[in-house]
Length: 110
Image 1 (cartoon, rainbow, N blue to C red):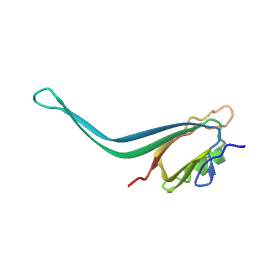
Image 2 (image 1 turned 45 degrees about the vertical axis):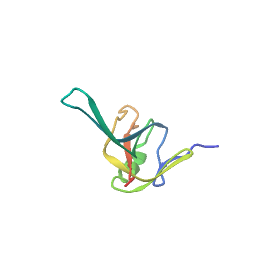
Image 3 (image 1 turned 90 degrees about the vertical axis):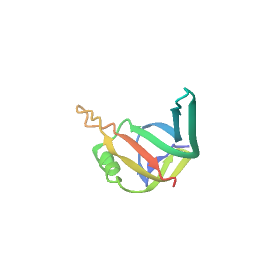
């Protein structure tokens, strides 16, 4: 089975992926020295993808999706209502004309 890595039908070539799940949380130290905490069970998702070997045309196809809400498919996991969080960091390999863009996606959960 071939792995599929796409955003809104644009292929994300040779990705390295990390996913962060966070929730609203705050803490404060009271005037008596105790800690007061408060939080929410609502989770936010940020997904960072670094494409390790990207051509210029693949890079431009990814950049063209900035501002587009779409579905992010990471092999067997599907994340709906995602957007690219600007900026896209580019690490070009000048010698070979290849790119290694680092793309962060946020998922709309409200």
